[in-house]
Amino acid sequence: MRTRTNALQHLAALVLALPSAASSQGLGLHGLLAEPILTSNQTEIEAKVFTSSRVPAVRIPASKEEWQETAARIRGQVLDEIVFRGEARAWRESVTRVEWMGSVGAGEGYSLKKLRYEAIPGLWIPALLYEPDSLDGAAPVVINVNGHDRSDGKAADYKQIRCINLAKRGVLALNLEWIGMGQLNTPGFGHYKINQLDLVGTSGVALHYLALSRAIDLMLDHQNADPSRVAVTGLSGGGWQTILISALDERVALANPVAGYSSFVTRAQFPGLDLGDSEQTPSDLAAVADYTHLTALRAPRLTLLTNNAHDTCCFRAEYALGPLLRAAKPAFGLHGKSGNLRHHVNQDPGHNYGQDNREAFYGFLGDAFFEGAQDFDAAEIDVIGELKSGEQLHVPLPENNLDIRQIAQGLARDAPPRPRRTTADLQAITKMPRYQVRGKLAGNSTSASVRATRWRLRMDNDWTVPAVELEGPAPGATAILVADGGRDSTVGAVRAQLALGKRVLAVDPYYFGESRIATKDWLWSLLIASLGERPLGIQAGQIAAAARWAKQRHGEAVELHAIGPRTSLAALVAAALEPGAVSGVRLVESFRSLAEIIERDIDARQAPELFCFGLLEAFEMDGIRELVAPRPVELVSQ
Image (cartoon, rainbow, N blue to C red):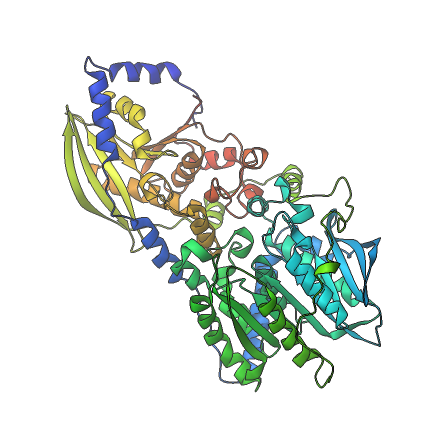
């Protein structure tokens, strides 16, 4: 392996590439590189087909017993293979610690108590308990979760109104803060940071799940809690939390997710609205279960799906609700409990858990948990005068309360020594496909003495990768160029290689340059990872396939040149797993360590392919470089 910075040679090549007409030649090269190859939105269209065609369908067997076996298998698989991976297995076994922090005065008919509890050791969640004054025996429990309300969090008016109304009806109502919101709205709790945990081989979604399951634990420890009457409800991200916990934790007898989720297929069809953040698309979930499965897992327990007809955010009733009901109804029918699956469509404007939606929940709760009670009224009680400020509802937290970033840093820092790894290990982690390539000519151009041939490289039946082949009068060896900035950012590097007499193939693999999706591009990569694929593997697979295609055309192995840390990682993986077509690698501004990703606090919005599940747990950059040997790897710092 050769690892060095050959700045003088690189500078000499640049000088050779600058004849008297240098500026015009440079502009000409840029034009050759920048000429569009793909059709409008082609990569996004292919991503829609790629993702939606891989989502597993719900298949309901013929008998209740068979479905119960199927449901238990899916539930166990999601918990064991998706939620509780890596360090999360140890978190699962920890004891829930709860600390009561005093009261916030009393309302009419209820008291309001502050508490905090540990989701995992060292990460405390602030919460509020609305406790009815006159509890006669066992009382229902409602876990109230909220969505992306970063400023108000648990103090949001609509949530306080709901909790107070529940307490006035004799319900123990817990109002907990969501990770990243309200009191936990700090940079270290950003949801896109949970992918940093994925990188070190621990499931980030486990933090969300445990925050919910611990909330149920602490409520069922209440002396008046009725374990047979536990409900969960919430809006938006709270709706997602509701279906996650209520599908997987069979203690939840009643669930009312409000405008909180849709099928993965629906998300691919409405990407501007529904794709979902990191917690909603955890790595590998969609390979095991769609949200249609999670809805069906509710059978035969009481479930009310609420969606807004005029939602301005996401999960509108017109498209989100139907696929969920269609998938889940047969499972409820097998139990003879079709009436336990209901839906409510709200006609108020916007993304809301307003009075109409709240009264639908009160009514459903009354039917289910207060059956036969003559005095139960679903009409909302006016409690505006009893609302508290965020300051009044503030729950003190430990100064050293852990956040997601600190957890990821700790796991990276404390990782045990890595054993020597093989290409089979790298293949298993990156899941790099071996694409068959069909090249379709997309046009020719000439500038000065450089001829450009544009290609659409069709990778299997999945992706079309744009490439420009540039040749001088007598081309020799071939260099493939990829860059974080896309192929039209590689003018200097292309000029240098042409001056050395090489043929250059400038390629834009998935997510870079012309292959980048215009809107919410990172969310597509999260969905691809959720389907059990790896964006890094797709990028590396496309680069390796382009190398095989070029070798077949020109008769010899090619050099890989990457500019930028992200494409450098993909190119290095491609070289390690494609020894036959790659003769060596030149990496400009590569990561020297994968731990830099966490140290620099990069998150999934900036570079989603970097968070390949378990990559840093198994490898460091030097370990991947060793897999390329004895072929040379050149590291260049600019």
